[in-house]
Amino acid sequence: KHEYLNPDAYTTQPPELEGRFIELFDVAAKEVPEVPVRMTALSCALLERYPLTEWMQRRKDNYRFLLAAIQDIPQICPVFGDLQGAQVPLFLPIRVVAADRDALRSFLRQQRIYCPVHWPLIPELDCPKHHRAQELAQTLLSLPIDHQLGFSDLERLVQNIINFWRRKNES
Image (cartoon, rainbow, N blue to C red; front, side, top):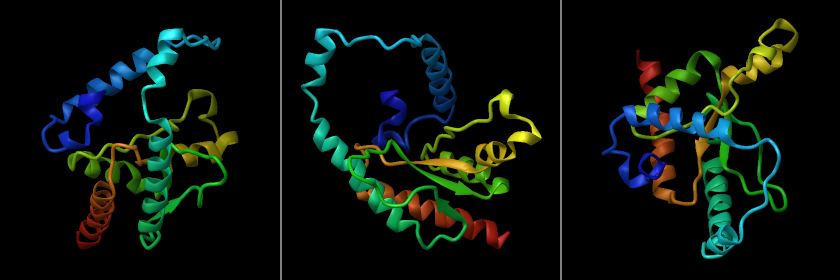
């Protein structure tokens, strides 16, 4: 995971690393117990060594920075506005026209920017009765705001989104 998500590695990691990361992530997700498990004393001690408050603030700052930076891109729409209270987001979810979402994601991947799709359509909802779920599954994309990213990384992300639409409009 570190190799794949490392922002310094955007230009050096082979594209096939994403597929391997996602494959391993899916395998690990199936191993997570459905019943909550209490953290061990060792896990608690290790967790206390990390600057979680700083990381949380960095995510909030990155979210707000990116939210402001994408406001003038008419082809995308943030799902949520500004943060409320103690919210600490993992990503900034946006909606993209269904016909363009996967192409935008692929373009960003070519630029070594990983934007996951966190809402794939599950088979139980793949029917006309759940058309709203289908629409969301086809249009939602998560923009990264990880605490490891700085404003220059987010500016690069925004510039690449703009470049995608510019190229699309030119063709």
